[in-house]
Length: 283
Image (tube, rainbow, N blue to C red; front, side):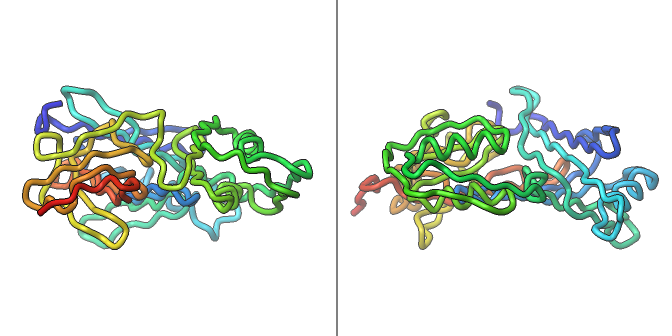
C-alpha cells in the first residue's frame, strides 16, 4: 500500500428508511474503540456542512426524549485510492448533537450492535454444557457467526442467562475465555490468545509504524497508519529501533482509531498485551 496516496472516506447514514452517503469532499472526523472484554465497539463521528434538513431530521429522530425515537444506522468506510476502502466502524447512533456556531456540524455517538441491548433474552443450558455449545447458543441468539478459536473444553454446570441480549457476550467472557463481537462474528479465543482467522502483522517503520511505541502497564502502545489488515485480536510482531524494549509478539486487546478526511489523523492506536514469553531481551 502506498502510505500517502489519496484517502477514501465515506459515511453512510440510514434513518427513517432513507440512506445518504457523504464522501471525503466533506469534512469528517471520527474516533472509536474496539475491545476484547465483551464490550461492544463505540464510535464518535463529526461531519460538517450537511443540509439543515438532514441534520434536524437526525437530531430529532435520535433524541431520547422523542416518543417516536428511531436509531440512525451509520457505516464509516475508509481506505486509500491504491488499495480501496473497508468498513472501519458500523453501528447505531445513540445520541446526536449539533456543534456551536459558526461552523455547525453534526456529532453522532454510536455503539455497534446497540439494537440488541433493548431486547430481553433468557436461556438455560443443559445441566452440564461445554463452553463451545454455550457460545454457539449466544451467537445464534444475536444473529452472529461463531468463530470459536479457544482450546477450552471446560464443562459448565447450570449455565443460565436472563437480561438484555447484548449483555450475553460480557457474561460469556466470564467463563475464562475472551469473547467479543467483530462485525457479524462472535470471536472466542483463549485469554491472551490471538485470532487464527486473521493474519499476523509485522509492524515497524517500514510497515506503518508512526513515532515511537511505548511500554504500558499491560504491554505496549503503538500508532500505525490505517490499514484493513489490522483487527481487534490480531497478533502483532512489533519492532522498534528507538525503543527496543517493546520488541516482541503481542495481541491487540484494544483497538482505537482516529481519522479525518482532510486533517492529519488517519491511524490506528493499538493497545497490546505480550504473548507469553514473547518479549525479546535487549541489553
